[in-house]
Length: 403
Image (cartoon, rainbow, N blue to C red; front, top):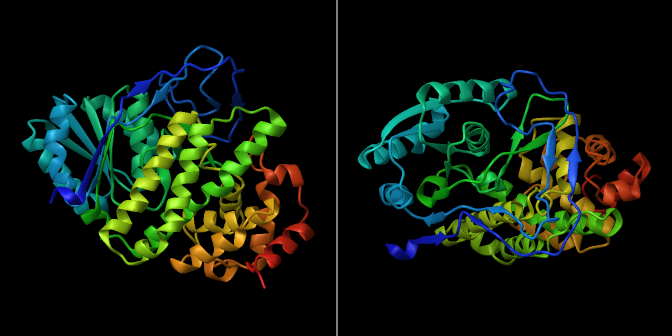
């Protein structure tokens, strides 16, 4: 039924007049294996926020976003509207290919495109290089990323380096990478992201996504709610470090978080309408990052806590679950309403304690203390306060995250 689908169209790039503002550049040197082809323009060691020193601000946005039941059936009309011809490559993993990748391939074939598929498992530097080599051999005109965050990130990076568009087809709603131009790379001693490209289109089928375990929905909610503290950190960096701050991108991220909080009961009901609220919030967060030219509106001290927890005691909880707990901690440090964040997370069944995350109390304390040091170029409340272990323990106890 048409009522179950929502189609949104936006220009691929827009220009907005801005007053002169200094260019902001973040430089960092991760411990990254040198396996990438130097000819390929993957911006691994340098992230540059879009310069506002000129009289325009470049934004790369999806041209079409389709969310709802049975939207995979809309692939032929989408490819026609976008003028896609020739060969398509479907990037997925074994599980997601069976869930949705095969269906995507079939609809692409019906659209008149020749179709190849490539299965991947992880998102390390070597994996990226291997994918790019395969793209060079197969020479597709468009790439479809069908899967979760790892697959979609792989599609972003590899399509960018090969100068072809990609279309995002998520099978889960565990985090906000569905629509963002940034991708996470693993294989280093520290987590970091690279600036890739935003998808040309997003096709999110709630019939497919609803089959994933409920925990993915919980993680997605945690990731969106965490924008409440991410925006606070961005504003703090602007006030104290003269970092660029975009009111529109910040407002979009905050609105997404507030909508998920306001619709928590609807989301918990497992109804399609609640899933669409979360999906649209995640997509809006990705668009906020595209507008900002960085992950700033969506990733702050709470994400640093999540990354630090992975370094201290990894593979226990999902990224969004950890970000939710991190947001409780950092909202407390800001003197904000951390109780509302905790209450909402509890209402959807998300972890709110170290025990529920599957880690020890000492792990949470160590992670909070470490979080402020893993990305020194990202100024947050953690750098401002420079907490020692005693202060971190006090914070974790005050918020009930540890006993």
